Length: 124
Image (cartoon, rainbow, N blue to C red; front, side, top):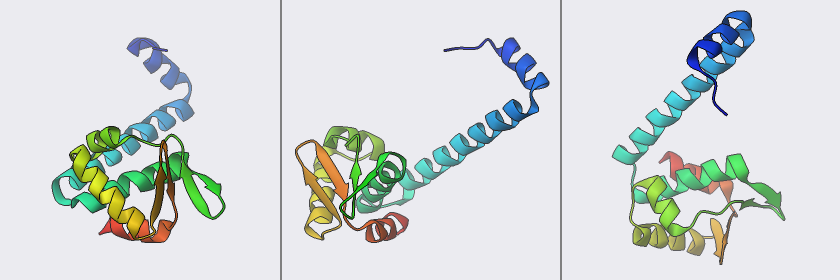
């Protein structure tokens, strides 16, 4: 759905709540972009992968038997694209996280087993 700019401005003039909501959304996106730029320029691969997993867990995860199941689960290629890493590096990091008991993985699924440890890695 698209709204012509002049119509949107008119709607915002009549509904200050809409203008505020649009501004809040724009500010949220600017902050997310700032965090992504920082993560891509300063964080190590494990921090990058952990940050994406935390984001997915917070936005799309569902509690199940003490774990957070990620739905949808990203493929290694999708994860690589979102972290600025190669698919091979993502696979190595995911294997380390799995071996440490922080995440669980399988064919077409990923779950966060220890969210506090994953958050600690993401924050560095």
